[in-house]
Amino acid sequence: MAVSRGAEWVSGYVAAWQSNDPADIAALFTELALYRTSPDSPPRVGHEAIVAGWLDDLDEPGTWAFDWSILHEHDDLVLVQGRTVYPAREDFLNLWIIRLAEDGRATEFTEWYMPRGHKG
Image (tube, rainbow, N blue to C red; front, side, top):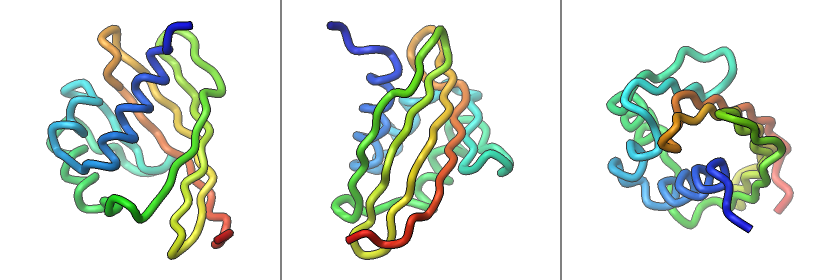
């Protein structure tokens, strides 16, 4: 079975999260993409703002784990459910809303997260 565009994008996101490499981050998004760190936050617009914001808030490799699944994918819309575990801190339940361009890069990304305390 072929891997969906959404699954490819999320895999790329996780790889960029692990590397924190600006080129890996920028490659995920169209030039004028909107990246929201929460539904009501102002968006980071474009590669420069997205990369800068990511690097300001980066997670060091090895300090987290992320499990995810695609809840829904249709046309350009991808909904992802995840769980981020920070063993030294706390866990988060995640919902990502992603809009993909024809080339598979995101035009919009919004993350919703709920802290769940530390589950160790």
